[in-house]
Image (cartoon, rainbow, N blue to C red):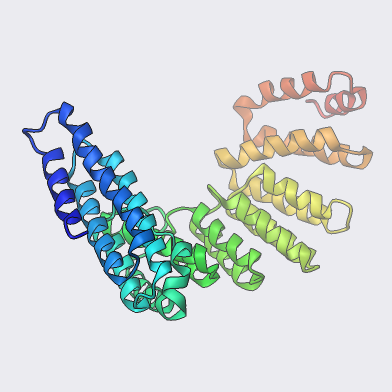
Length: 361
């Protein structure tokens, strides 16, 4: 048993030596895998604290080898994972100090970012409540001080941050602790999609008020771009679930006034088109585009005209034609081509074409 660490050290040293040829690797690899097989045999014949300590030393050796090697990283990482699995089984067969075990598992991951991921489920019995509580307390104390990656910033995941992130993600998944999951997610707010993740987790956990707060934060950060539409969808769903359609409409309205978008117009339309709220709201949204007069606003205006032409009833036809007249003033150079486009799409609509003709269009 005591000769195994020396065998590992010898095989690792020669495997990555400059003087070792590629033909020598199979022999060195055989020596390393033989150690793994012998550890599994000892698990049957001689389990106990000494075996646990022995395996921990060998796992550390192999993890060091993964970090140091330039030629056999994949094979050594897989072998390290295999030996770590043997370690978990050895711990389950004995009664190691749970706090000491928690420290060793954390140190293995933090000092060896390339080490295999620790599955806490395999150590559930050995860690018990005391070990898991210590593991969590120490991991959180190390993770909390990490700076938040703000919106629009490029995340710099050095090896230490990456190792801590991996530890926290596994811990959150194993414990099914929403607060831990949120702690992890809120360390990276570099895009609107990250705000969406946070809001979705909160919504799924039944913490709807907090979810809406994060949606608002995400909308302010994105300025209507990127994940904004998905954030709005989430807010609309929640307000409708609460029986507050007026709040759902308000979300769409505010987002449209921040950054006009046809999808937002259609969302608002779908919510109130059959109510008395729609005509004044529609007028406000279209007037906002007219006052804006920018390239994006005019493009959205044109698309709204096309949507309403396709969906209009008799009562709306005069209004839509007025919008077309207004567009002539907003975009005089391109209006003739756009009008021909509209006429070609509605060539069979004599009522519309007659109305356009009456208006000199």
